[in-house]
Image (cartoon, rainbow, N blue to C red):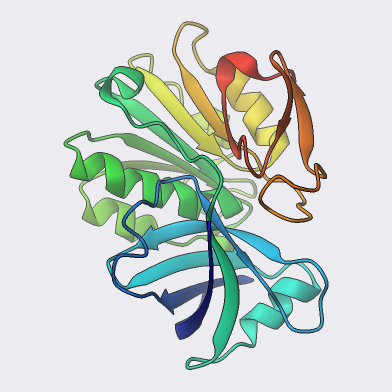
Length: 249
């Protein structure tokens, strides 16, 4: 974990209530990043930091995508390019992308705020020679983002919207029926993750990234603990990615 003061390169709205922020990083800082990790941002005037999944990174930048849902993220949306922000990074365990886990045809399933993390994972898998299928869910077409970025990687993308304004009317489980998937990776609201677990074939491996309120973000306060088959785990440190077989729903 690194505590750093990073400069905001850009901060722009990309969909309804959805913003993309790019932060400048010193060369080498992102060398050990893994898909599924997050950063924790300090916001002036607020006590707790805000954890945001890492969407992408390069040698000198890290990108996050966030939704404006409360005081913290509303304040983030007003940060201008050139400002400096205090961050902890990278946090969490991230996804295991070893070939024996992924198989030949993984499917990446993202709902709403879980989409940026799936984009990050998709880029990593493609760079390793694996071409996943992608399933994305949004409430409405106005909240959609990054669809074309996935397709620019020649990725098959299926989209569901709750109101039917784009793609299939329904949820991600309504468009993830391919029986040939060898594994799955998912991020989104817990209700979505639970539904994905029920819909996926019982004999394939899967990994879930959980969203949770966090106090410290690095395992000290125990505020985001959850029970698994192997005892209590901290979402911020032992997660946010948990294996399918260890989860107690």
